[in-house]
Amino acid sequence: MRSLRRIPTFLGLAMGLAVPAVAHDYGYREAGSLVGVSLSVGGRSTPLLAARDGSGRFYLEAREGQSYEVTLTNRTGERLGVALVVDGLNAISGQRQPGSAPGRMYVLAPWEDTVVRGWRSSLSDVRRFTFVDERGSYAARSDKANSKMGWIEVVVYREQRRAVSRPYPFPYQPYAERPGADDRGREEESTARRAPAPPASAPAEGMSRDQAEKLGSLGYGGTAQAYPGTGWGRQTYDPVEIVSFDPQPRAAERVTLRYEYAPALRALGLLPPQWWARDRLQDRDGGFAPAPRW
View (tube, rainbow, N blue to C red):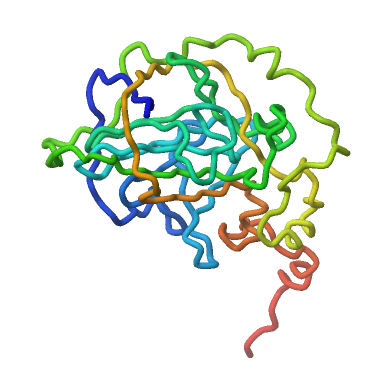
């Protein structure tokens, strides 16, 4: 099977830890075991919030207009294939991810990490992952909206014929940018990106979210404009090469992330309440001079 691998000028290496590192008192920096998964939004690391229903998935905060990146870290001594699925679409092919087949994948060498910045538009470029209103998402604009809008899935496959395991190298060297790999496309977004979004009255497929009744009380109303999606952002230079990789028929690991706006995460009990969110009428009952003790 032909898959993609980032062209290395040097290898980005990562510690092979199976336990996620704590980034906040309410979140984790990474998820995943065979492949570590972490995200940055607007250039800053974002915490992953564990779901409270025991499903094993994680939530993260979406910020409209901000681009985001997904860092994938191979924590093993073998090559692994990784299918990244955003809003139900394969991030390389842009097609709906088949349930029984791996689809197109990125291949990570032993102990290697890589940063996936967007939808793959060629072997040399991507279109940045950007949080937008769900109606303006790449999936909706391509008539591929589905029940997994708002999901980021990382599906890991082992190789059919495993190569000899490579021991963890020393010293540790984290991922760093390649020289000259900064954005080549600072130009305006394409005309396709500026095309009008579907009308608000148009029915949207897969608009359900956890505890939708709570979100409705916050003014979300259950319509398409209530939720974030991933848009087709600016062009960025990000070269890869095609390699041969024969995956095993079944996935070895699956990491599921859900992104929502902050009010939705608070309604789900995953973010602490805002410190200024208090009852002002109740405040009026206090603040007076207390009676003397004697």
